[in-house]
Image (cartoon, rainbow, N blue to C red; front, top):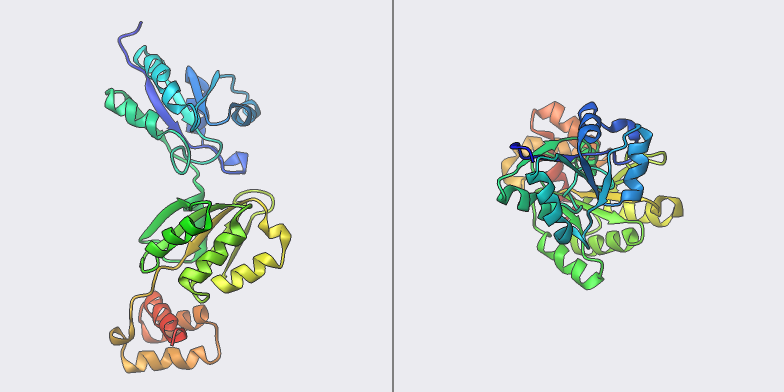
Length: 282
């Protein structure tokens, strides 16, 4: 047994396009004694693609507590272990929390090898405010519980981010429309980095109509992003600034009107956009 304890590496892997893996991730996976994977069959394809023969062990929501003990023993014995999920960054709506917490509690080193995560990838292209956001992951599968969770977020001013599956995407959007209103701006990102990647922005009503009108867009993995509840902006804008936006809204969609009004008045585009939302609500 070596005097050096092993390191638990939390390694991000591609969410679709295999070329998105980092050189450091490949090096770490190649030299680790063991790779703990959510689904060994899935991860074996990734490792095989890059000619990595490191042994795999399954670590998923049903066996994580059981596997953690043996993995901690191997780490304490000096072996490095790499933790990966099926796609993206482990622990972000994926298994691994119990292992990481237990390793830290045991005084073992836990090191991140960062890379893709669908949440950040989606936010980076959404055009919604990203200085402050709330990641909610997957909502409850049952409608009553889902709506109850959404109700707690109705007045959240930060951008909201959710994951959803193809089986529930239409029902989920319908429930969001009911709770947040059809005019709430949103962005739907599907199959990020994959062959049929799609991103679409609009109101919740527009996105639901679009989704229901095309069965192909109901397939795959989804990230749903909602603009937070706009704060009342009327008192913060001067009469002239409000008038400029109101006139532009007679001819242009809100997003374009807010952008042009911002250039004319010097007021932040987000503030004008939020005021426009208030106008739409009457």
